[in-house]
Image (tube, rainbow, N blue to C red):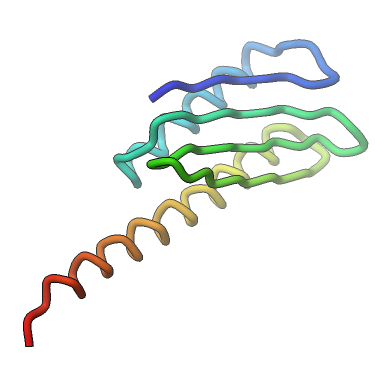
Length: 102
């Protein structure tokens, strides 16, 4: 899995980059088909974190804003994990339903 961390309108901060890499690694526990993960830290009116996770040609996007980058990162990580779990559940249900013989 490739992981890219980008900072917009702020200088690179090693502690944020390390936390983003750890968060991206957590995603592989919940879904195996992840090929690429992009993490963006955006400093506008709020501190925004955006995840873009590429899975088998599809892209899942999560964006979270708050007054602190670490809060935004943790919230966005939780949201992405929920999306990955939901996608995996749908995929396994689809496979299970197609295997059923009446």
